[in-house]
Image (cartoon, rainbow, N blue to C red; front, side, top):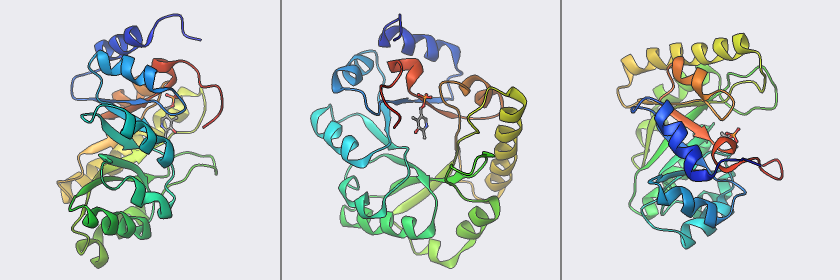
Amino acid sequence: MNIKGIKENIEDIIASIPSHVTLVAVSKTKPVTDILEAYSCGQRVFGENKIQEMVAKYEELPKDIQWHMIGHLQRNKVKYMAHFVDLIHGVDSLKTLQEINKQAKKHNRVIKCLLQAKIAAEDTKFGLSFSEISEILASSEIKELENIAIVGLMGMATFTDNQQQLEKEFSYLKTFFDKLLTQYPKIKTLSMGMSGDYQLAIKKGSNMIRVGSSIFGVRNYIA
Ligand SMILES: *Cc1c(COP(=O)(O)O)cnc(C)c1O
């Protein structure tokens, strides 16, 4: 349990990060009362990793919240969030982009997406290699998808306390991101950094951090 409250946690984080960095408050598994507490201190961007849970919270909560889907996507569930999701972080295939495009079109929207890059040494983390990302961006199929906008990259570092390892992974992604930026001016967002490593991620060039437990306290189960 956190000794400080949600409000203090958010204020502390906001005070400690540069203003160009977007804080995504990761509210997965947490009740709407917690989200409202964060909302009352001005937080508007929230991240969830399960589509059903995000939809339920969207329906209950103020409509000026920007909902980010940060979890691994099940393609057949994209349709449930297509009318409201603001940014999808974890896209890792052309097929998924095509499905997002199809669902976004039904609602006459353009849905922003980040491609998830694999930077961790662990096998368990999803994501694309840099060459796969380059291939997707250069493909002819992507040009036909008018209802999605690829606005950046997302990465999850290895779950470790080893600062050198983390530094290496964040720098590796930042270098690739900078390279893409020269070719694709729309690629502006670099989503990397969580509760344990966001300070380092920002130092290494992140401009969007996804922070859960440092705001809302520890989660009761792994999600
Ligand atoms: C849960 C989660 C986070 C937040 O993790 P904390 O360590 O609680 O800050 C960030 N990114 C993704 C993809 C997550 O699933």
